[in-house]
Structures are given as C-alpha cells and as structure tokens.
Image 1 (cartoon, rainbow, N blue to C red):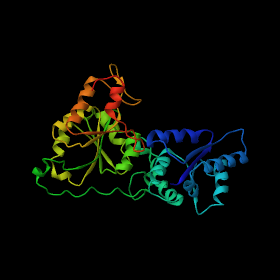
Image 2 (cartoon, rainbow, N blue to C red):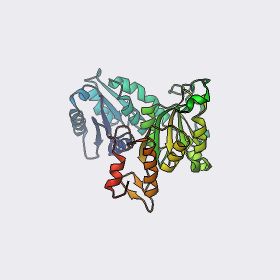
Image 3 (tube, rainbow, N blue to C red):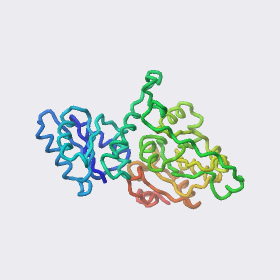
Image 4 (tube, one colour):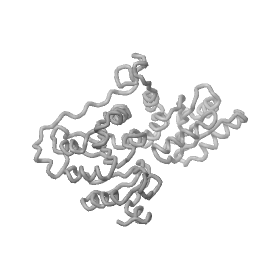
Length: 336
C-alpha cells in the first residue's frame, strides 16, 4: 500500500489527517508533518524522512506527498526527497479534504504513488464549490460537464421489462448498503461508503424528512459528485421494491430510525443486512458506545428486525471492525 505523508505550515496537516480519519477511518502508513515557526529546513527534512521511515517496508517503496502550498518549505523539502526517488514518489499540492479522502480510497486499488497523484487532482478541484452557484464562473464550473476535470457520471441502466410478480421474494433493485444513521447523508456516507459501495443512487427513506423541504434540499445538495440523492417516504420505497423500472439500479439506502426500517421490512422490502452507523442521543436513551444511543422502543425495533432475518453490521466507516450490536446493548444494562 502506498505510504502518504501530509505536510503543512503549522498543524494544518495534523488537523486534516484527523478529519480524514473521522470520515474514512483510521489509516495505516499515513503521517502528518508540521513545519513550525521555530524550525528550519533541516528540521523539516528530518521530520519528512522520519515519517517515511515509520511506514511498513512495502509502503516505503511508494510514497505520496500531499502538501499545502506549492513553493513553500514543506513542498521544497519534499521535492528534495522526491528528486532522489522520482520513479517511486509523487507530490500533489493544494491539499484539501476531498483530495485526502480520494487518496485514501485510491490506494485500496492503486499500486503506485503516480497513479494516485494523477487520479486525485480532479476530486480536489471538484471539492471547491460556491454558493450561491451563480457566482461560479461558467468556464470554471465543478459540475460534471465538458469544462470539468471529472468524467461525466455514467447514465443509469436502461429499464428492463420484468413481470412485477417476480419481486415477491426479492427487491427490484440491488441494495449496495442499507444504513441506519440519524445524521443521514453526511461526510462518512458521501465519501467513504459511497466510494466503497458505488451506488447508482442514494435514497434517504424517511416520512419526516420527505415532508420537510429544507431538510430535503440540504440532503440532495450533499450528494457526492456523479451520484444523485433522493428523499422519499417509506411507502414509496415499498412501491419501488416491486417496480421493474428499477431493475439494474444499485441503491444506498439511509434510514433515520430503526422504526422506519421496521416499516419498510414489514411492507415487503428485503433488507438482508443493516449497517448501524449512528443513533443520536436524546433524553431517555442509553449510550451503548460513543455513537449509538437506544431506548426500549429502539431495542424492540431492532429485535423485530433480527427476528425477521436482518443481520446487523455495526460500523461507522468501511475500515472499522464490526461490533456485536446486542452484546453492546446487554453490556449497557438493557434487556434484549
């Protein structure tokens, strides 16, 4: 796996590394290097070399530098190292969070620093956007069109004519991920999970949100580039599950509460596995870990889902290890 050195003036590198971990999970063979006001070029060079030396042997063979500014001291010292290893190292400047997350995702498949460097530039540019959108110069739009570095999204598969009765025991669409997350569509979903699942569409399934125009607008605008997000009521998902027009679609389903998932499953939507991402704390609920909070009604809903064959995958991001949901509930002193 390619090693990544994040370097900046001050502690920006440490901060953005922490942000990346919140969204994509903790990463091995990634080091942040800070260049502080009381340090000189030789100090910085040693920090960079120490960062590379800390990597596993394989990750030292291919190294990507992500730097804040072209021409600054972190760039200059990284460039001095790069000049000695041009075939196995690469530098990208203008560091932002979309760039870092894309680098994390890319190194799951890319074998060289050069491959990742070439790939992440478009995502870094696409992450710079303006509201109101009317302020964006037409020849500098980040939309996926002829002026963008990003390729246009692939069109959805053409509808396939299938007898609706074929969906008695299965959904018309494929579920790439069904997730329970009180925050619905946010950074971890729009980046880490969307890149892992590669859905054709993100669907927020909630009666409450579907009738709230402001929340609907915020969610649809948070969709990652190239993937459309929709907000629909639960009954609509039940209808879609039997609609042959959605054959070939791969959905990332987001639910706000376990009770909403129960309504969908009882209505005939087949959800073999439910990813548990976050359940917000409120009065009367018990924290079972740092992001999950439940009350008796939640536990009953989760038990109902389990009794109906739904498996649980307790992870915030793909890189996390799975936890046993009911073991967490029991440990917190609640009855199952």
